[in-house]
Image (cartoon, rainbow, N blue to C red):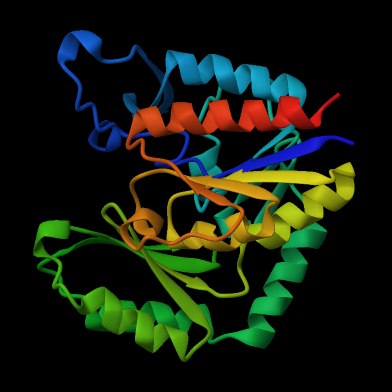
Length: 271
């Protein structure tokens, strides 16, 4: 049976310049490969070693990118290795099969959101009304499924995100702060549900996962084994579970370590 490897992308496998955490002396810095260009500028990177590990992983497991990015944002990424047959976008709102949305899956997600949580319009309006223009740079709606703000972190009031989380909790939504983005996401919108569907379709009996943020917790808990880097929301709160390994590496070297762990576990499980 195939091994399914589902991984978050940003700040887990790929890193912006600001998130690389190159703390070593310059001559010892790893060689980097650009894997995303936006508006003619390089945006995201992984180490060249990580690129080779991901290529090897794609040859031995069913690799599934699992991201909160929209489909358009995901399609900017040019990952090394075989093109993934499945990808999860919009935090589980879209399941891509050979790059194309599975419309039945998407319709089922929309129906569940309508039944179980407050409407997007209510949450979006609250964000617009309660966020201070002094520290908000952008307000975005993603795929008509969830909302997020781009903020100046140094100006963000210390308790604002916690207060937003309490308000959202009572309406069936969750809040996540990742870098300069504050996400408000319906609780039923999960990466784990989409990963379980891919596991069903592929017949995978072993699922491995990695992620760094609160929105990845359900993905990690749904996996047989999971890894989180030494940075991000989960590390900041010392979040863990019995099947989760907390890695010490931070930044782009954490992505390399995660891929090593994926490959080792896959090879152990595959005769």
